[in-house]
Image (tube, rainbow, N blue to C red; front, side):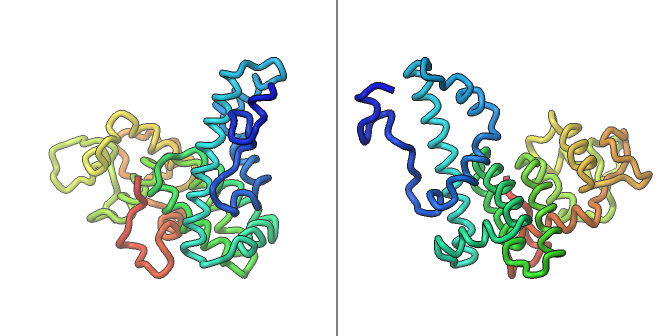
Length: 251
């Protein structure tokens, strides 16, 4: 790195997020950020011989991710009212909290969708607030599962749980002219081209199932319903004190 780039305020200045929470949890945040394939590819090229263009790209990507993590931490602070030190203590208090934090921050860093991360933060906060380790372990699994979903996956899951006549089951596409069918591509705009992948992902993670027990997500014409674990995940994404059936995960 040349002398000019190492000056304060120059392109080589250390990255800093605007808030103190990111600084306090820098190790966790770095671990989350480094799971991003795009950033990992840039880091692989960030040798002493790397070009200024490559390093500048690295800084831009890193700052974007850190900003998103700071935003996610803000959601947690809003819900808990905790100080920076209390938040850091909660993140590092035990193995389950540490695992949850890594999953939550990884998802937060990777997604530009603010409302989706806000919904995910509700599940994360429930886990942090759990005093019983068995319940904390359950929420840790919930956060891990949800963190691997795309926003549209969560929207489909929420629609299946909270939509009208949701107990009837849902079909991916309309297979006949019966008006009482629940059809996902009609209920969730934008899902037409990816509905097979969405249903496959939700089913293989145990969030939805068919009456015949198929878990491949590929059963043609099968009616899909939300599992008990799927209902738990949807409920976990509602704000504490808010009725679970009045809010769907946002996209």
